[in-house]
Image 1: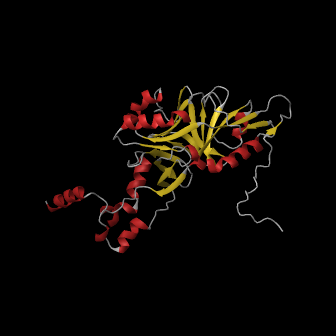
Image 2: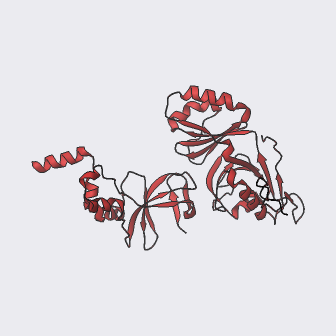
Length: 205
Length: 126
């Protein structure tokens, strides 16, 4: 008799292997690394109010649309005229939130920890932009989407935030509930270039 | 596909946006003074012109902000993009705003703040 265990896990649809060699030899065209050990904070505050957080964050939070602030391992992405996504090391979370509350006091703001709602991937490899171009309408050429730029868009119908915080790679944020889909889509799109998915929870730097 | 210029993010594909329908529909402040027929103008009736249409759009997959668009429904040409709460400034956009049947509706008159209406009434008395 077939097992009817209601707790049995649904089979993963991601049938593609985690490693697909580059058909032309050499390094895989796309590398995917799941990033853990980070805290994500969605900050709703006007430019004026969030400016008082510059010291706590370490550098000025972005006020220009679709720009990214980088300091050490921390990132701050512009999401809207009064909305910023902060990414800091998980180890700093408690202290950061405490100081954030003490700095902003009774001002009109909201800081929500959304770590569990968002998955972070680092996309590297020489063909990463060719892969993204298959499902994203944005012009991600380095001359347009340079280091220090970020953007929210759709990747094959899934909402994603892209942030170019390094010369040779970029960050992709997607909903946790979409992360299986996004990952398998990226794998599928990268078959012709070869890819390597690294799911080991190595904290990025 | 339309290319819509988000006031914050710049030109993006229509796919990233959601359309919120006709713009400049003000909620009556005193619905109790309106008849059901007059309130229906606010609640149910929407314009569907052949030509310039003023509509609301939201950059749903981007910065998630609302803005207004003056679009020609015949050619899909976007004449103007202007902020929420503002009125169109282009000639065609202004003409479309003023020509809308809604401007004369009781529902829209009832949407004006009391201070403005008082002034109107007092000036009419004089």
